[in-house]
Image (cartoon, rainbow, N blue to C red; front, side, top):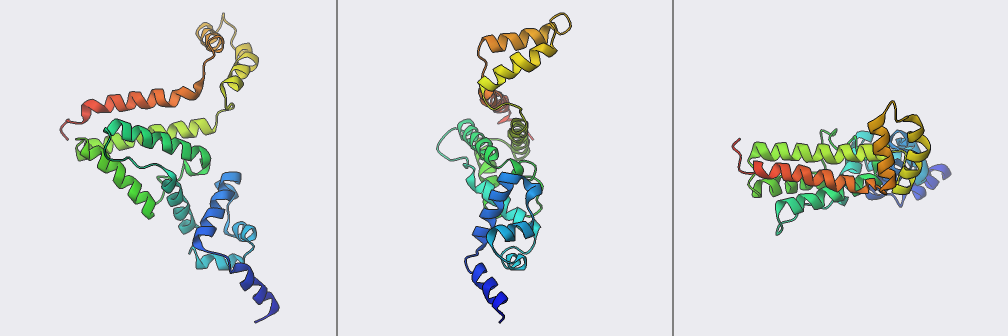
Amino acid sequence: MSAKEQHQVESDAGLSKQRVVAEAIRLADRDGIGGLSMRRLAVVLGAGAMSLYHYVASKEELLVAMIDSVFEEMELPTEGIDWQSAMRRRAVSARQVLARHRWAIGLLESQTTSGPANLRHREAVTACLRRAGFSVVMATHANWLLDVYVYGFALQEANLPFATADELADMVENVFLPQLPPDEFPYLHESAATLVAEGYDPAGEFIFGLDLVLAALEPLRASAE
């Protein structure tokens, strides 16, 4: 074995699939999924690019493992509480996880292969809805609706030009209101001015909408397929 090969073996000695996936997630969290490549990941790990394929056979397999890790962070609906509370906690947890891993929002439903945490999560959600009395079809409707709401909200939140109520107020006063002359946009001007005056905080919007969705689903529990 050459000195170069010996050095590479020593560099790769600390690798594991768990470490490869964890570092890939850190890269994606920092630079987005577009900033992730097997070559760049190998450089960050101080390993040979080809050595990564001992742990993940392809970038597609790496993405499946990364998404599975994201699902692992989400709270599962638990037994022993009413279905709305269980699904509410699950939705809040999913939103928090996606705020940490914004790159994952568009990938959660794109994989044809699912990891074990992904499958456990989906089984727990389906079980919660079925035990609550939803038919198979209604449980599917409910699952779709909740996921669309959570993922859609997370995607919108990830692209907002403000992060806090104070930043929003400052933006409304200095950017939005000057674009909304009251004689041309009376309702928009009124809404913007009123929300700033009342100290509106958009942080409550997720729960407001989530509770509406859950309340709307409640009457459908006993509906026929």
